Image (tube, rainbow, N blue to C red):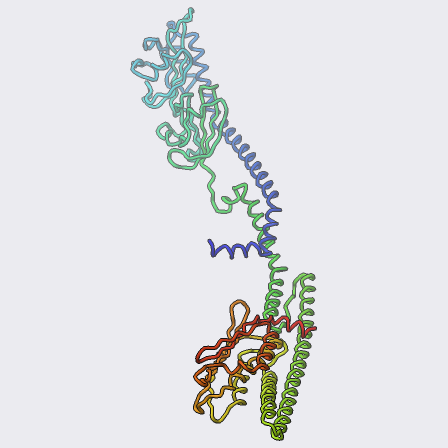
Length: 573
């Protein structure tokens, strides 16, 4: 997560993402309204479809309902006139008037057959369906798997028979074979079932043997026996997708269930378009893609080209070249043109500045060169005075001055070769000065062993000159060593170290001559040299520290390095 966050943050900060996000927020209310509208439209369409299915179910069971109602009416009429010697003839005539009827009979409360439309011997008390009908105080409709006449599944329609006192004396039983309810429709398409309030299937258009497989998996018929019609989608117990519609047909006692095969989802297109939220979502997503591509094509691509050119220019490359802005908006083309004009102006200004710097460097080198020549001329004049001087003390004073003048000439020669306007590499300058001063002060009867160590330190010219003068003076003092033995070797160590806090340390150490059993640094009695070193240290902004032991004399100065911006500002001024 830690490594992925910078990439995610960079993606979120991109112009294309931000514009797409703002557009998504702007389109979101419209998308929500579209989804709600589509959902309402789908709900209305589903409600209309359900009403149509309920209507189709009512139409499909019209004949069955009419037959059951007609049979119930006949049973109710017979209950008023049942009994008497003409009972069998009456039952027979009713059976002839209703050809779908299998049996019309008057059965007593004890289960005895009083009269019937056909000659029959049957124990009605042993039949649970007929016994339940006899026990009922009102009209009833029931199903028997084995009828008394056909021995097949029948629908029993019963009505109680009462005497003049209202006492129940039996019932009129009319049986309808299920063959009377078979529909001429294709049983593979439409199935009609009737059931009572207890959820008992009464009739099935495809036959009672397969009626159980046509029932819904997730609903019971008892739950569907309601006063209101209902339609729903689901699967039957055979696992097939079906459309179900349950409607009441005789009050709250008789109900019909129609079932159709669910419309096949032939392709993915119909499946996708059936979702109400999918079309608005696709439009919303397509709008984001179009916005992203538009911004990428018109803005981001051009800005990316400009950004690459700017980064290349900022890193130091001055090969700007032509930036292809064909097909980009006018504002971006104008910005690219302004950028090109700016880079041209910067390149010209840099060229002029480099030329000015070069001229100043040439002038500065010429100054150092002429100063060096003048100092060498002065040293030559001093040599002439030394040769003409009669007093040895005078010659010694002039020789010391000549040494310092030659040291100055050496410094200016090295500055002439290494100096820049704003920076001087201390290692190169101090190493050259050390070599030249030792060479000028070499004596035939004495050898000098020099150890040099310089860190990479960059100085401003204001610090390079006094530091070089200080080093030359310190080396000159070290070389004044006068050993009692001509074979003695002088050991000199020169180092410049850079400190981490923006400071530097120059250290010059040399071996000490042993004279009369004592050890001492030659510098101690040279008052002029001490004053010069103190003056140079003051220019550097540091203090000189000296230490001497039995074998070594050491000079150390620590000073703060000045930032190069000071020299740049002075040169610019």
